[in-house]
Length: 453
Image (cartoon, rainbow, N blue to C red; front, side, top):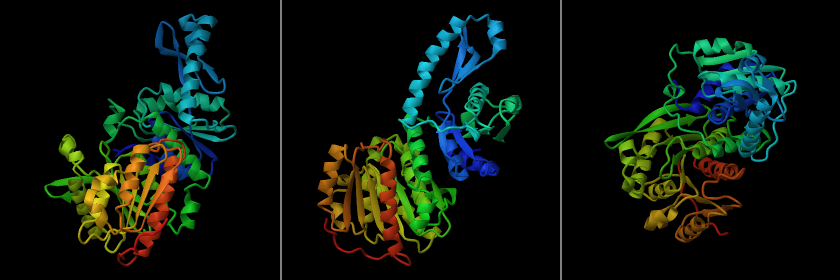
């Protein structure tokens, strides 16, 4: 049914459009619900937060909940279960004390210092990536109401019809895209149901806050000449020799150019960091292609993962395919880690018409002697705390004969996991591509000689 959680979120948002004027706050259930909620929040123009809840389990039967707790002292108790289990106040207090400590630590880790968004008088939209039994979703709805929400909407891509019916008393409205009669596991309804980590949740919360407050939102996209829209993503298959490589092609209206992403070793087209940058480019009016450089059998061979000539060749084949799909569009490369070496390798090929290259935490040194043949304007972005890679980028830059620049993001490590650092990468890439792809409208032009610092 769904490509991944982002796809599910985009489709779920279409069913929730009636809430745009209802003063909504979108609350993702960590961790898997947050990527879905991120897409919903963006399309509703609403703030994004997590709703952290903990079930209070009966001591001798922990799977049976006698209540739930939320942040700021919120406590929901089911008196019927308390009577049935014969619980004493001290037993209940001991369970709550233990769960309250877990809740506080989890909220602190996920929010990374951000305050909870107040719900008083607003519409709380509780979002999960799928609902099996409904116990956590029910608790989240009760907690949202206890926090002062005037209305509670529970939204999910997939849930059984029986559970949807049971949750009707917990939320004012339940929205579900797919209600299969048999629901063995939530993951069976996703092509990609890989685990969501705490770092990704924190990153999405930070991105949502930046975008709502002008960091990379629609108003900023308009200021940079973009279409101010994300466009629609299409799953594609790219022929490359004897194999076909899966990819996602996104074309906003009035696309000012196209950026092809080359992922690093151990990653792929679903890389959350590359997707974050791609979405920022889409909002600036740039099309994007994220695709797998290798098929599954090749990824199992570590020599293929680091075969830069092979990866560069695949990137070139994808570029040729893209030229046929969108004739006349200027094309840029965004490479991460070893993908940056592949991007530079392909850009240095005879007859390459790539208009610009951006490297995120890249290994340009792996492109070796081909660096001197690169003619596309190249931006190298490295974390200030990524010492070894920073030095390799400085050495590689001395070999480049094209227009180039090295940008160091203070306080960032290799993966740019620190709050706000990936947003800086996205902004730098957006400006670089917007400048150089716009300059090649109607056909690529050769860049000037190296630009001095």
